[in-house]
Amino acid sequence: MSRSAGILAAVFAVAGLATAALAGPRDARHPDEGRERYVAAGCWQCHGYEGQGGAGPRIGPRPLPLPAFTALLRKPVSDMPPYSARVLPDGDVLLIHRFLASRPPPADLAEVQRRAESLPAAP
Ligand code: HEC
Image 1 (tube, rainbow, N blue to C red):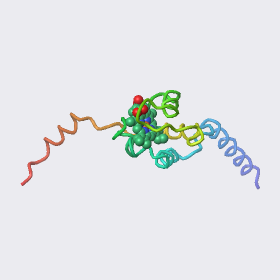
Image 2 (image 1 turned 90 degrees about the vertical axis):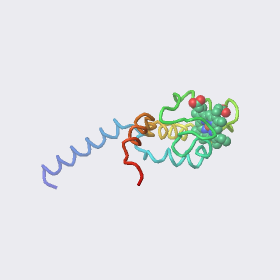
Image 3 (image 1 turned 45 degrees about the horizontal axis):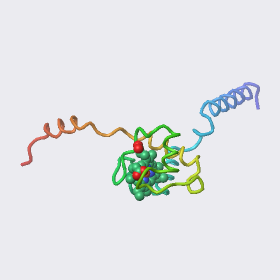
Image 4 (image 1 turned 135 degrees about the vertical axis):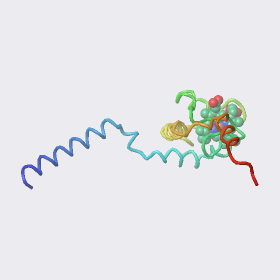
């Protein structure tokens, strides 16, 4: 390896390490991992595939802060089945929480109505 190529390789290695350190170990995981856990745990059955709600309340895109979120999973208030740490470890809860937080915001109803009214009338 020539001297300049060696220096270049060293620069890239350091930059790579710095990026990994900044991102932290959590961010090395793919964001879809949270969706996989969410689907596998069956949360979608009551909260919808996007956390938009159904039989259970909406839980995305602004889920409760992680400690409260985790506490409610471990000891739900009423109709929700409890998820112990053996069934759903804290790491999985974190991924699910991040998945929910990354959901797009719900549509603005006024905007939806405005657009619907601006459509041409059906023939
Ligand atoms: C069988 C239906 C059902 C399933 C499955 C379910 N939930 Fe729920 N969930 C509910 C209901 C109903 C509530 C309303 C409060 C209660 O009953 O505890 C709720 C409440 C919550 C809350 C509190 C919401 C708030 O803002 O007050 C969170 C967080 C939550 N669920 C997350 C989850 C996650 C994550 C999963 C999957 C691991 C899950 N739930 C699976 C029915 C369900």
